[in-house]
Amino acid sequence: MSVSGDRTDRPTAVCVMTPDVAARVLPSELRTRLSASVRLAPEPEDPYAGENFTEAVADADILISGWGCPRLTAEVLARAPRLRAVMHAAGTVKELVSDAVWERGIVVSSAADANAGPVVSYTLALITLAVRRTLTMAAGYRDGWPGFGARSGGDGHTIGIVGASRIGCRVIAGLTASDAGYDILVSDPYLTDEEAARLGAVRVELAELCRRSGVVSIHAPLLPETVGLLDAGMLALIPDGGVLINTARGAIVDTAALTQECSSGRLEAYLDVTDPEPLPPEHPLLGLSNVLVTPHIAGAQGSEVRRLGEYAVAEVERWLKGEPLLGEVTREALPRLA
Image 1 (cartoon, rainbow, N blue to C red):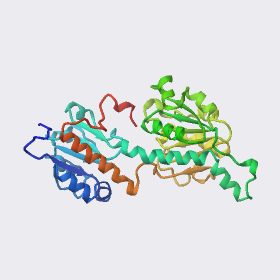
Image 2: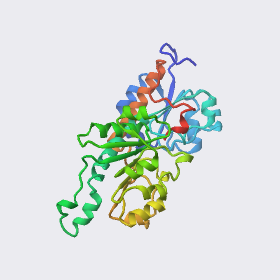
Image 3: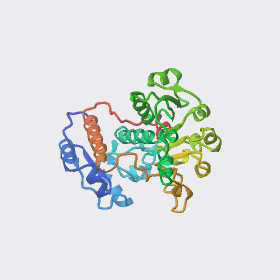
Image 4: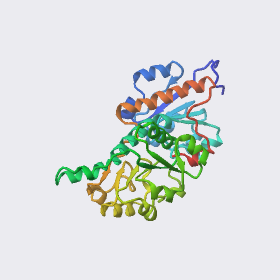
């Protein structure tokens, strides 16, 4: 099937998201813009029910998917013979695509770049809080106003970035733009010294990063080799009074080891992701004054999710014109992505 601008038949696109998500990701004005280029198929009432999903994609050329969309297995694709492109209006596509997607030559795009902006802003805000030891200061305030000598500032602080991912690189950019004069370390097995220097950081091994950093911020993907990457040994290397920030994936950190470090009062932690997720209500981390646990809110939330819909719509428009996709995901790159 041709995807050039001179096609005589308008391709069919189907949006598969729950109604509440779809209303924010693809509001009416974005749907109007999209329908100028494609025929929008009716959305199933219960899009995540297996039979409803396969019926919805049966005649679709383009699937616009969101969080929780059913996996595109060989069985599903056998019932979607026209499907040629998947525009994921969310982040990771690891739970969405299967080998059958690549074997069919279906093009896949993710709005991860659009989702990265809020994560970067959130992380930079947490680093600002972390260098001031905000959680410890707030807890101590209950016993009296902290003295001048007990206070911490950010100038000259060493920040360790674990993972030069799209988010990690943008966090480094934000730190280098600050007037705080941060020393920035980065640990990533795929990054060279020269590439790190261009980012404004110094590449080091993870152990050295932990030893030298007052704040360690995680931005690595969850891979077999990164499960438990920040284990008891690595956490023990972080200096007393250090802070761990995790806005990536909970399983990258050994939860039991982190609980022990934070329970002792040696480390602070800002955790937007945990393992398990969510933590059980009685988990010790939830009761510690030097730990802030948030419900996976670093990525696009509320009014921000429209960015994901705008990105997906723009990708559809580029695909129809035969232009390169900005968010294309390839089979080869997928294992290293979040």
